[in-house]
Length: 149
Image (cartoon, rainbow, N blue to C red; front, side, top):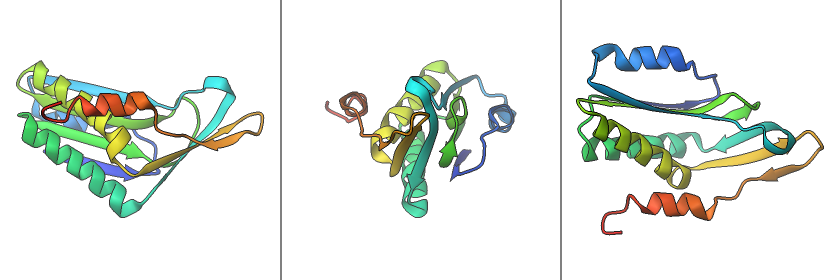
């Protein structure tokens, strides 16, 4: 079962995990990404293209499901305005054994940072506002998953 969604609503991690793991899989791995409050950040706003962002997430999920033997996969990304501490992304993967579930989660979080159309704008308590550029490290981590690299 593959579940993918993108939207402005809060992510209920416990409810999503319960729905994901209803099959009693052998191993489940997860990644919960939260908005950091570094340097006085007051809001992180994620802009997206509704059709292309969802298509990008669905493509990544399909790639992971084809690469690893997964019993279940959940990929949820939030968009819109968020405060520090709020969940921005949830990745859950289950398989018969831990190695495949762990690899799928790492692949998905590494690749979505470079492959999915999302733009981050930070607003700080002192009035600073700016768009977040991708970091070199994001590209280096994503490249690890390219065959032959």
